[in-house]
Image (cartoon, rainbow, N blue to C red; front, side):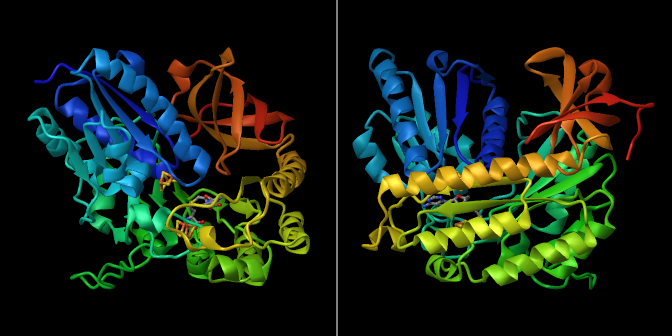
Length: 450
Ligand code: SAH
Ligand code: SF4
Ligand code: F3S
């Protein structure tokens, strides 16, 4: 048994959060205990993100404090995991020689083995591409209600701005049986919601055989949804992130037909201009994107639609940016993650000489964000006086007499209640207050299960 106290700080996307939960599970399994304060831990893992320059820099400032501690306490173990680790590899050791372990995201499940090498006195770099092993330990999940389940790792696209294919490697789909088995266990443990995860989750299964030995089709996300839909105990199923290239009408139909699949679609469009989309190598036009959303709304009229967008891509003109505003105006998003383009190492667009200045990028970002907040407020209005089914997850950190959860469409909702009674339950809430990104209401009638 190992009595070290460990801390993991996680940056970046849901994929990293899921990896951190699995790494924490491995450390628990080794006998270590979680400690909240990173500056009191014996082993610290930074699970890093490099999607934008800012995300990468954060980790270096955190590391500065830890390396100082390490000079006083040589027994401190320092680990950098995730996407910066993969991007920098050996170079990270030269920059921060105090590190004990640098490990890419594909190695998350191997943390135990890698640490054994470290405890034997080695400084270890694990960034070679590997086949991701099925995880045999139990993740230490942050929530007791809602769980991430990895479905497909990696990305086979080549968007010209993006580091992900370089740091997460090629697509690797888990088998439907492994996914279902994990969900069944979650159902038995009392989890009620599962979010299926992948960088491009709708590309799921392209690397699997199309037909199982029993003759069942298993090659798409749609088939997977039908296959896992009846897992006992799991009442809500979500999935993210979808790529417009792979988002089929059949998938939309399945979402409309399967009662547990929630009415929320996260489909990034990145730009509303066809020339910019082409320069980004996204593989679709804004017309195609609009058709997808039309189809979603035809089958699932109340669906919440969210997306990601980039402003200030190299060469983006004011007119091209206006096309992004126009797309946003026309569609009416419930939520939009926006970002100013950030040039990234080993990506084609970073080398182009048509880079925009920071002032132009931040001006466009502000204008887009302004539009988004107006729209989100408008979209929220439709909930006023409606009765929504809310799955209660936690106490409202700002008000101890209130609990909070989400609607099927993923709107954060508050209402009066006791978490001990309501945790994981689905309650009916009459919405009395609407804000752009959250709602407040009063509970009506008794508890219901979907
Ligand atoms: N696979 C998903 C998104 C993955 S990355 C997709 O293709 O849609 C998450 C988001 O980060 C992207 O949607 C994009 O909006 C943003 N992003 C990625 N690289 C970026 C960069 N170099 N600069 C700014 N934003 C970026
Ligand atoms: Fe990056 Fe494009 Fe892959 Fe999304 S699809 S992760 S934006 S390369
Ligand atoms: Fe960041 Fe890696 Fe996710 S770069 S956004 S943590 S895939």
